[in-house]
Image (cartoon, rainbow, N blue to C red):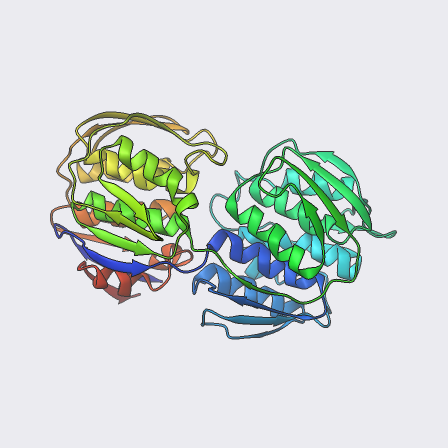
Length: 419
């Protein structure tokens, strides 16, 4: 494991381009399992989570070319296992997306408890309920084990939770079920829409992408497809906050205007000067002001993936901000470390934190307990006086391409220290 050494107090400025959406890359890779033909995915993010998903596919028998580049060619002509490698599954929550395709190709699927951020608190109940509704039955086992002796079947289902990966699991299974499946209370995030479009290229009929009701006509012999991923608006928003926290200026290319809008709305609420024009998201040097209240929401609400970063921004804003992440527990707990950096904050409960700013932060050792709060703590360290040490760096590199190089590109004084 590596440590990131950060010397704070430098304004970050410059220009960079984000790669493809991490949250789209994983379900698209899982979708490749549904066909024996080759699929090509371009603008793929070169991040740790993508590498783990590729290793999982290879373990199941897939041929993958281009790992480490932004173009992957995936061919799943044969799928020779129904249980992905347990160690790899334990590193990636997105491994749950393999269940539907494995049931389609093998008639059964066995999956160890998926890892990733907060695995003990994030269940896959919605995913399993959708698969059972499509004909899967649970098999007694020490892990998640399902089989479909009569194959997947179309259904009409209301998801108890508008879970993104739960919706994607249902979509992937429905693509292999002969007939029409209707999914209600579906997630509407851009990466769910992107999965629908990719499956459409493969031959699946899908109506309603981007709405809460999907109609999927599945069961046909799927072809290969080529798809260029949309830019990662979460990564773009992260770099925008990093610049704002340090009082810098940045231009970010690669994300779509319509995706950035939800991020820009909150930044503007905090009087951060920013604009989106012709695919370039610009943030200018600003003096942030407290927003009063920031609440996460289902799309097109403010994304939970950015709540940790905007909390750090609130430490540098004039006034009091209540940040409410009603979607996930524990994400804000990691930000208690900001207290040791002299931030003025009060953690009300697992979902709410009150921040008074601005605070002059002080560097200190930091623990990157999850991907997004890890990036937020890096932002805090960049704004702080003195040196901070964040570990393990690999936790943050799961979702951010060439992190150390990009920080240096923007003028950050950082270095990597191997364990």
